[in-house]
Image (cartoon, rainbow, N blue to C red):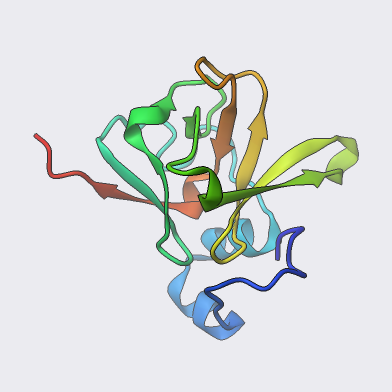
Length: 140
């Protein structure tokens, strides 16, 4: 589980249920703080309108209105749908100091946030496609 696994979340799931519901990559990313390879995720280049939801608990996390091409190879957003939808935790893995982003509802690892994004926030929420599910909007 992510670095915040000692916290109690409003939605929890058994390992068996998650292994049945999620692909091996989705499980590795969301439960073991894994990372998909750059430019391989289904949403890294998606421009479709909609809401990006947590693949584990289905909580809405980001919208296509705040998604942009950061050139990083991962879907990037300049802000979450609401500040209380995600949590940030200091991540000192791999000899780096980064800020991990998790779902505040279930604790799933989503990715990391960096201070090199566009205005108005200056943030780059660099998320794994494997941690998200795009719910397309009905707008044509």
